[in-house]
Image 1 (spheres, rainbow, N blue to C red):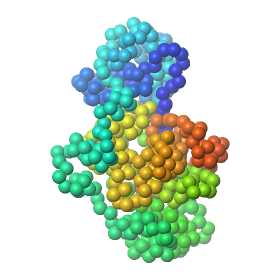
Image 2: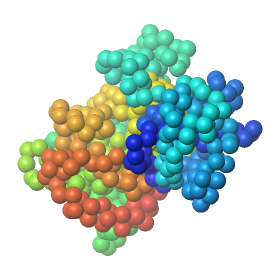
Image 3: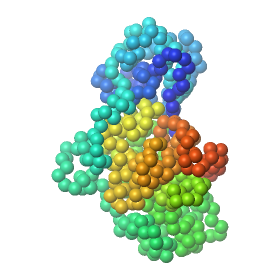
Image 4: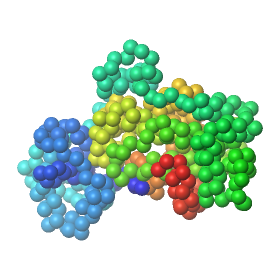
Length: 435
């Protein structure tokens, strides 16, 4: 379980530069770059001729939390490490250095870093976006695949991607999910004929999270009395997607486990949805649950498509914990998990509410169709990040978003505390799903 970081508030008029601790077999190197920029590891490797890697988040916090670093002598010793700095820092007589993991902050003069090696090791969000392919997501994804493989796109994109096909059971479940008239009478026969799905449904129904009264004695009992149509459909789809594409082993160190953040996001987003005023703009709880359960599905697809480069992506995320994940992915892979996850789920004919919410989940100002699905997912994810239950930099939920959804901030905070009291039960449910 991880906790994201945010760039510290500037304590004065001095420009802020971020400290990043890197290491390899030869020792430590300290990189200094503008606080809101991305550390470009490829530039670091070219400049130093070393494959320097960022230290783990918890190791950085432990290192920079040393009491000695709160005093000038300790800070002077820190800066005696080999320094690699962005040229911008040399334009100032004095700057403020920050380290977000440990909330370390202190001023230094130009003389203290005069002997540092200077190189262009930082990128801004604007610089990253300026060189990204533009246009339809399908085109962007195709260009990204071309960039990282020797294949050239001559056949259908689905074949080129080499992604597994859906099983007959999952195809039938997607059909039921998209049919507004479908109910448990159509679902139960589908569950019964699939041994794996039957076993999963029985284990979900018996889990402490749902706390069903009495013994769950049959598939009918599990679906009708305990879980219900929406929940069985959504969890079956979520686990099927997860089984098709394995959770990568070489993800960012210290990241929240995939299924744990999926279940927390789904459960919290559904609660937010049910708390909204009943009107035509209220998202359907079942679809918001599914959208949030699959909100990170594109992460699995990226790992499947770009295995050699996924390790590099993980190191970039570790080195830039304050930076938006989609911007890091654009820099390293030229495509984001939201783009590729939404596109693939759309090609499998999941509802537009789901694919739209997943595609735009990081856009607080999104105002297109199904915008309330996007806002609910955005709110749930940002509040869970603050509790270390979802990955990404710490960001505040805009005050106006509460009003737009008809929610009150104290009520939402109370719902989150209540959800977190179910932590053990949620972890048991997560174990049944995959982590």
